[in-house]
Length: 128
Image (cartoon, rainbow, N blue to C red; front, side, top):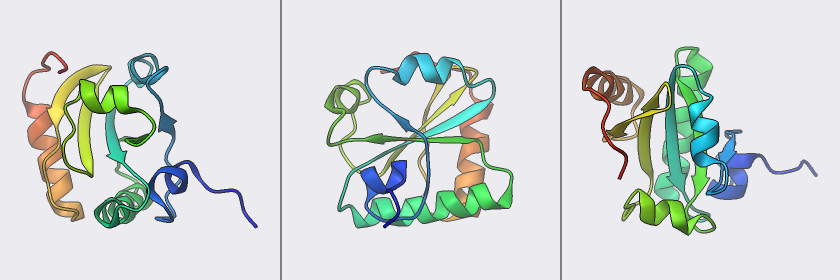
């Protein structure tokens, strides 16, 4: 039996192997991403999270995705509180380590791409 991927550990079977961030390395690792990063907050058993994971995998397969990372909302509750996550899945955008806000879009690739472009067109802001 294959070892679960980072996303499967968090998002239960979406088949997406996204690098996992924890409350202990979140800010440090994001600061090392030179371009754009999208962070997905998810949890085991979340159907909407699995749907978003499938779309993020399509984005990555298309070759134009930003760096995609995942946070397990069940185990990293400090990050959930810090980013005021009330509904899952939740997406957040960073560019060059700077916070650009929440990515609000349905799990459809064209809509995610457009929402990301709009988010990056605004200046960076202070993280919550």
